[in-house]
Amino acid sequence: MEPLISMGVVALMGAAATIAGASEDLESDVGSQSNPNSQVQLAPQMMYPHRIYNKAVSGEPPSNALMCAIGGTVAMVLMTGANMSPLFAITFGALIAAMVHGTFAVTSFLGRPTSQKRFKQPVYLDVLTSHTPVIMGYSFITTFCVVVVSYLMVAVLGHPFPLPLIAFIWGITIGAIGSSTGDVHYGAEREFQAFEFGSGLNAANSGNIVRKGESGLRNSIDNSWFCAKFGGPVTGIAFGMTVFLSAWITTVFDPAKGAAVGWLSIIVGVIMVVIMIIWNRKIEVAARNAFGPYKEDKMEEEVAA
Image (cartoon, rainbow, N blue to C red; front, side, top):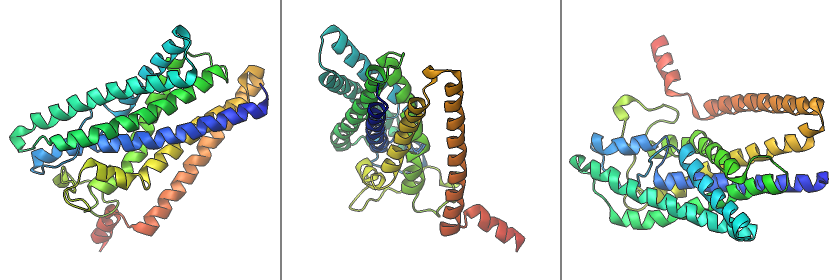
């Protein structure tokens, strides 16, 4: 394959991955899945009933892995067994995955608040009917884009793994990135925005989430509106960079051209990781200087005084 065509495919994969990352993070925000979910579950027990959708039956990595694997499997069966075009097969696979994901969301939402009845946590049916379609919509976008990336890797770049397996691996990856990147701007900065920036979460404040929205009581769509400004795009960029850079390295330094080129691709990857670690550290220090000092710093100053 011509290098120019290969790089165009890699760029398309990066763009699709960016969209997938943003939609994955916003889906988890609407459904309150992953890291902040523990605080949403704990809130009623601490006498803080709320209108936040609570659906996490597992963390984002296994949930998205299942979702993307279903979409990839259905798409592959339709393409190989029914000779359906890739576009329609991937679309139908993403639709089936969104329906399965929506089913899990409904059963989780109805089960978790019901189990918290003793803590006076109501089951809001209007939250169920208004949020579940949004969750399924984001799920469809995420699955569609991930399966597109997986299909391009198999059909165009000649990856040896089958389509469902690649979709499964990327599903785990996008879920992990959503947990590590996007949740910071949801759990820490949205649910506990009443507390000092960077102060962490003291045990005494567990479950004390902010429940008042911009208009009325807060729900998970309010969280999605907030996260769409920064948390979602940052997650999308993180996943897009992961897909693009990993594919770029093996496209420019193709291991199939020999062992020397393969080792060169590994070296280039290590250099990129080191650069990002240094860059991340500089961003953290800049944030501490601009918005700090953190609570730990103030405590140290008080002790020193």
